[in-house]
Length: 476
Image 1 (cartoon, rainbow, N blue to C red):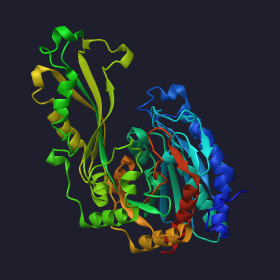
Image 2: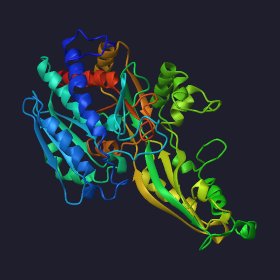
Image 3: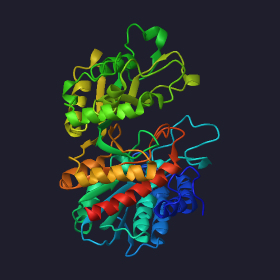
């Protein structure tokens, strides 16, 4: 059994146990999991026939079943035509319920991986395990059960625990409401929800996510011709479909600043979140923007770190993430193309409803098409954001104590720029619950992009923190 040399708590029995499980069992498991191209249904419509999601489910299920956890039951639940979920239950010293959540489906390959890396090619370099899905968030099932096992082995307590691992999160969790309904009585009414699918501002302390942005994803298509024509003959008479796209996008955001110009997509930022952004910025400093792989000479612009934190957590932002209709450069002749399609991703403030935002975005893009072009915006995935309820004193104290114990530094609370639609569902369904939303996606980990990695020591210490917080929840 090995223990990371840089672990300040290596002599502590719980930390020694957890770090050993991570090195000897979890890292090898995640290594094999990375090899499985279990893409989310949005990116693999034939997921059932391909069987990759089922392979990942079987691997995680087998490891979980073998854990020496008192009272553990493991079940793969399948509803007709829907991705499966892994449902686990562990009785506790009280009948109170903790719900621990993660997912096993993955984003697609993406281009730009280092020559020696790849999405389905696990490579360990020191503290980093490269490959798609390890950090986002294939580790969650392993970390959740290891935290519970550590509690049982070290004289601590935990309430009844339910662990739910889904396979549709990267597609907006559209299957999950059906499982929540089917499993409602078996889940019960959680007083604490632990989600391990979020991020961390650095690898030096525990980070607690206090909000998540909503999202609208869709495809904007502009048709101006029925077929391509000679650009020398038509340009100047026929408008470029790409130019029309540029004009339409300017209805949504200012191309000079990136600010979304549709005021209905903005929200008032609560004072508590403004203060948390200032505190997080004080901890991170220039790392707020320096963590991103800008090319030489590029940067985020003249914005204060606290404003950049708010820009990525509480303000809407539009990105173009894909295209169709533009040929590869070697095939790009002097042709005025008939059509352009752009995949749009609109991130929303946590408190702006995604369905209404999708309707507003569609109306804005489709109204009064320039030059009479045929314009349509097809919405794929509206997902609501989430804002945490007021934190209970016991949870605030437990998070701080766990961070100090296992990292030697205080915890930090901050919103995250990503979206976890399940949190919005849970917040609505369990309004009385406290939420511990955290994760391992820190600087350069690059979830969804090339060269994604899992920071192993951080994942191990995070597992220790979850164990401590489970114990504190029972003793509160």
